[in-house]
Length: 148
Image (cartoon, rainbow, N blue to C red; front, side):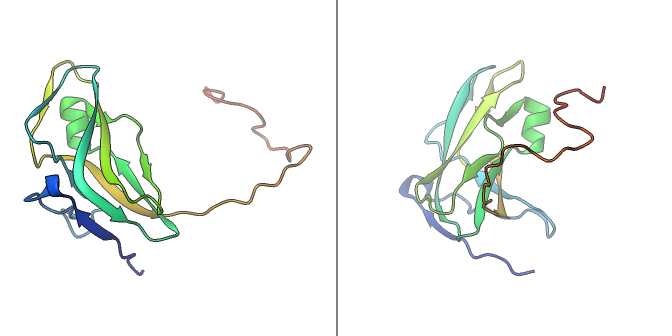
């Protein structure tokens, strides 16, 4: 399988931080760093937008998915508020991570902390076809919890 080439620019406030990296040979996600100037305390229930100091050029046909890091989510309650966040291939601004503290205690984010992971994934754009009626299925319109 070929690997898409993602160009990356380190912004001035990201100087000195590690570039995102796969932490194991089979890892799906690249860890994103916090490019905060000083420690950032996130109170329970608080939402913050954390800069990464990075801008990307994701190739056409792909997207970036910003997802929580499982250790932060499970151990401290810190998760991505819009998980997964989407970075479109035509976006060239700074990657920032919206985090929410769902835990019972404040969490402090330090400069360089790995706050989220980035997945580069293929995207398929659908062709919509308006019809008068949808084809039937066994499930039909059964929604949340319909199977018990």
